[in-house]
View 1 (cartoon, rainbow, N blue to C red):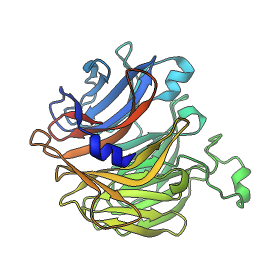
View 2: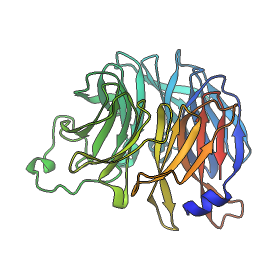
View 3: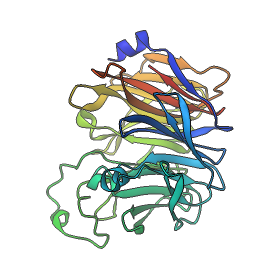
View 4: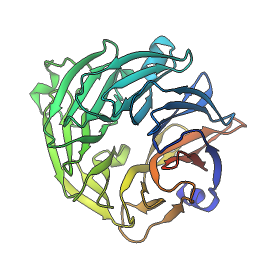
Length: 352
């Protein structure tokens, strides 16, 4: 699939409207409409219709940079609401109903800017994880709007977070079957991964709220972390201001591989999807976007030359965020994966 992407991919769409860097993008379908949401340093959250190539909504309630945006599947499947969650340097997390153009709620417990956010893969996305410059990670119940627990251990700002896609295979801990003080039903076996300005990556157990591991190796800020899935379930991918992309083994706590192709900060990392009729899983190809205005593809089985490089043009300046999306073809008979990215100059582009 990667060879097909490399040989035939081209720029197929550009969304314009943001006035500053697009720091985060997400993709989802609502009522059979394909949508992208974006958060920007221009302090806005925007929603774009992929099929009709236009902006359908914009929110300007944040008073500082919007760091991360995510569509909420929990609101949609439980209440039929069309909701985006956004985090900001104004210290808040906000929920927006983009169908009825209104703000639903605000989480204000963080005491400094809020970085990455991630909805739980369990319980239909009822729980939200957030990292902050107050050096903490919080786990929220979005049904009750309560902060369930604060994870402490990082020595500096927490820039990015992810939640493991599947439960761990650890069945030996007797505490696994016990309720704990945060009472997250269904979170047993899942972990949080966080990247920080303290140059470390840390793994946390969601049910016990304990730190399980610390990965040390990056020599500058960690800006992006991603869990692998399926055969790559026990790996974490990271990108850093030290210009490197690194792959880690969760079980051993050791670095598996390092990629040094970028010439400036690495803002975003992703595993290339492997799409079948029944599922989407990770392939052995990884992708990274950088301040050097390139997107680089590498094979995790080798740290040799890159497989492919997409160079942004002058209108992009640098690449801030990446998202692989599976767009429905117009004939509705099959799907292709496409690469969506946000740039420093406020552009959102789709390659496919």
